[in-house]
Structures are given as structure tokens and as C-alpha cells.
Amino acid sequence: MKTITKLNSQETLLKYGISPSIHRMTIMNYMLQHRTHPTADEIYSHLHGDIPTLSKTTIYNTLKLLVAKGAIQEITIDEKNTRYDAEIEPHSHFKCNVCGHIYDVPSPKIGGITDKSIYKISEVQVYYRGICTICRSLLMH
Image 1 (cartoon, rainbow, N blue to C red):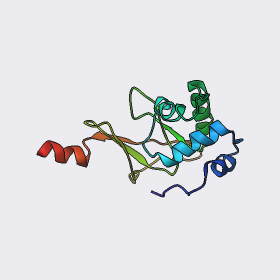
Image 2 (image 1 turned 60 degrees about the vertical axis):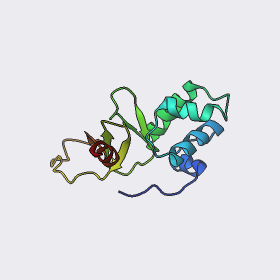
Image 3 (image 1 turned 60 degrees about the horizontal axis):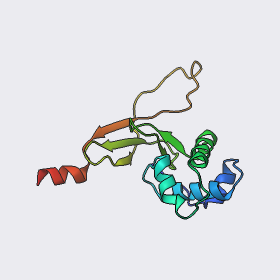
Image 4 (image 1 turned 90 degrees about the vertical axis):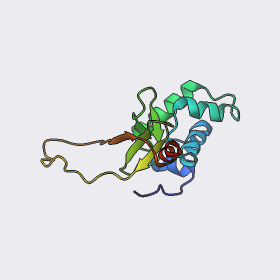
């Protein structure tokens, strides 16, 4: 799995054809710096103190735009909340059933659709659930 190129938020937005505004740059910067697979509410909670004019609607609309343009990906490993990931290279996700943390993991090498003339694949998501190494070690003691 590759790590994302270290572009600043304005360059990243421009790369994906998104007009940079202060709110969009702030949200993109948050996504690039916090690799925690945040929810829209988590992003709002973190940024609202610094930018009181930032609304939840702006967060949701910006995330929707970033996903639509391919700058970030939307992940649905969490049944209760949609989460977002700035790592757009193909990879899978693992969610710990104990602590709830979501980890990036390399995608498995599995057989795919062989007749590509029938299908145009735009997205593949693979999710794993279990107990992470940290929680396993705590449970064993």
C-alpha cells in the first residue's frame, strides 16, 4: 500500500479539480493529517472550535464533493457511521471489535471479474473485523 503524496490541501484540491475555499482546504488538511478514518461529526467537533462559522452542512457537502471527485474515499465498515479516508490507493480496512479502531491493511490478492468487457468497476471495498494486536495483548493479561 502506498502512502499518499505529501501535497498540501490546496494542491490536493486543485489536483482533483476542486476549487479551494478556506473551509474545503481546512477539511482536506484535516483528512491529510488525521489518518483515523473520521466521521463527519468527528471532523466538525475537531474543527469547529477554530472556525466557528463552519457548519455541519458544510462538512457533509465538502466530504460529498471530495468523495465524488476521488480526493478521498467513503468507507462503510462502521454500521452506525460513514467514515472517510484520505488514502485513495486500493487497500482494505480492519475494524477491532473491542476498541473500535479502524486500520488500513493491504488488499488481498483475490480473483476478480475476468470479463472486463461486461463490467466497469468503479470501487472495491474489503472489510475485516476481529480483535487488533493491542486489544489481544490486553485481553491475554
